[in-house]
Length: 340
Image (cartoon, rainbow, N blue to C red; front, side, top):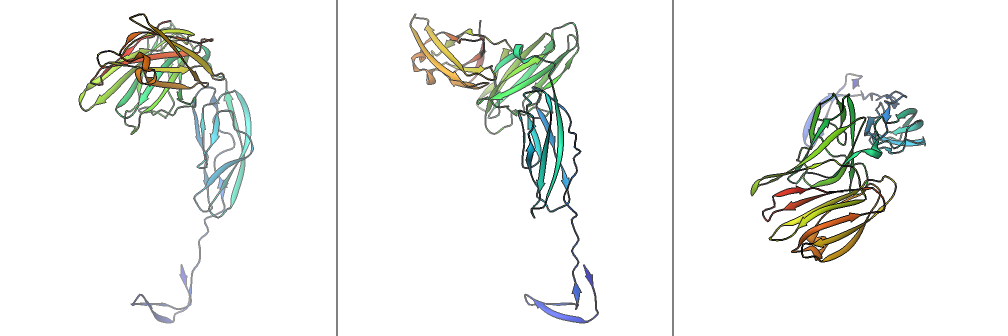
């Protein structure tokens, strides 16, 4: 603010006498023109590995809003109005697109960006699968990865939610939805979800690698009324014919989790229940590509209530991964293995 003239004036603001200068002139300071400050060549990404990059601007009047105005982002990526490019790239290639930023006065700036997605060195068609993971509402999932090969191995996790979308599961000390690394022969790596999400987040994971690895998922449940409970499942290959025991007797109940590991085709699954008394019932379910479901067996399939026996999960293609949990009346649990 600058003031010209020297005539003293007095006025009243809400009954308060204010003495100032007459001929006061206010000078506005310009925020500068709106400019995109992120360079035109964005960091490269890799197929199957979660990507995150923020676009930045300066000048104008915040807040800003971003959009793609021409061209297209690589398949699997999206640009948020906040300027964040995120997602899991689905195909390799080099693409260009124009992004525009708009400020609160409707001023705009546009820039063309180039983004290269490299082909992954890991093969998800033969990845190990973990049929269930849970985070929050008392649950925490821990991961252990071991290099079983004679050479260094790269590994990458992909996480999927119930609907088959990339799952941004929180990772302690890391970025949401991102878990990858390199292990020397005999090397190990450990990671976990924080267990602090207010609601239970659920999905599944697949782990691809450049060599032979072993993967375990350790489930931990904390309940104020009981000691912590844990169960462990091993990462396994997908199958078309999988068996699992169940026990819904004496107050125990069985929980089941199933995922469709096919990224493009829906999967029809037949469930055949054979009880220890010899009775047989069948049911079916359908999962969208990369979708996941988890349920309490006697609730979803009442014919199994009060019974125990085996479940045969069968499908036309080897695109299933299955795991189970046996819950006690006090809500502690143990994991159930699946056989194929």
